[in-house]
Length: 459
Image (cartoon, rainbow, N blue to C red; front, side, top):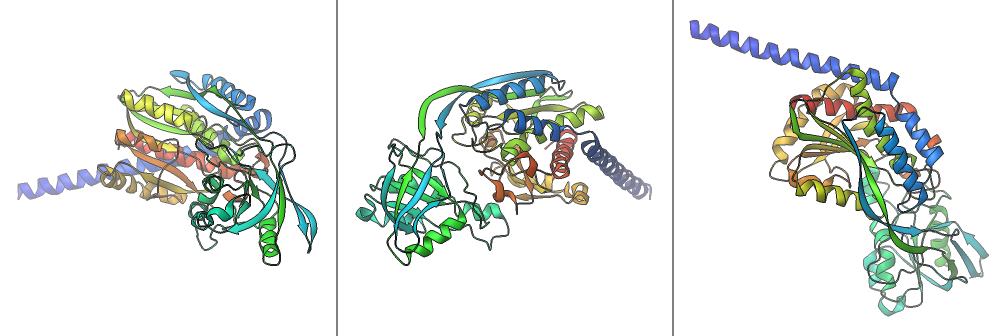
């Protein structure tokens, strides 16, 4: 009888403590949201980064100014240490705006098309290149052209799949034609490439983004607006079309740049690191407000929230603003090479690089040896995060943190609502005015809440 009573008392005490801890965590997360939504600075930081610094393509003066802004801002945040981590980054310049003009149509005459050079495009020369256009939907279809591609401009026209609920899934299903298409037709002898913009919208705004060449001389490569892509496709059904394509791009010598890093040492487990971050660079045609100004300021807001709440982290908190995600990932490679070599122990790394929209949760990944166990621990926190509309699911982390897998931690990507992201991605309209303050702050609060749980309970 005594043993039974003692067992019952033990069970009551255990669950009482568990419920008390959950209540404490719930109250603390509520306070985190209150602070982030009333005392946050991320929107003001974003305004400065986008309006005062502006475009930040790797190797540019804007990127250098962004590093300096980051260093000065970090120095005011009460980190135990702040440093710049050097990395050599590619230096590509767009030059004067590109153009594409239909020159021989019997249906519409001559007509300018709305295009933008892809990052990594080659230079067409002063007079441009003029050639017949061949439309394809896939890279395999382009490769099958064989000798027919020689001397032609190849038009890749596969839309993002509108049936995909996640626009990131739609993007993933279409972006290979932009990243690899121009190179594949270049080796066949094509003189240029035109790629449908990566967006679900039908509009007049072309979207840039990287295209990758290796040892080959890059051919001129541009993105075309979705409206003009549809028009060109319809015209090609009626007649042969010749286009004059002009690009003014230039590859220069690699330049020295930096990741910006700040760290607060953990009071109990200083060797266990929780990283929050985003990428500091952006394309040169916009302010990089959603991609990825939102991510870098949200990651720093985590530190600001902890400071304002007087939370002394048990584990080391590290904020990293990575350089060169857009066209090389040199910053991510350098950070992972350094950290993995020590080796350090990142128990978690959280990247925000999907825009400053309403947060829906976090996606995760890890080495397969540890993923199942660590994911279960994080998944249990949905009871605390669910009231804020957040879930934790499989689905990857971020390009800048995924290389930390060898450290056997759990890697997260902030998952905002995706429906509007590709309206702005790599386009001229990715500007400060298109970021909603409250949505941005909610994302920062979500990251702060997750960091609080990881820091308190471990992973």
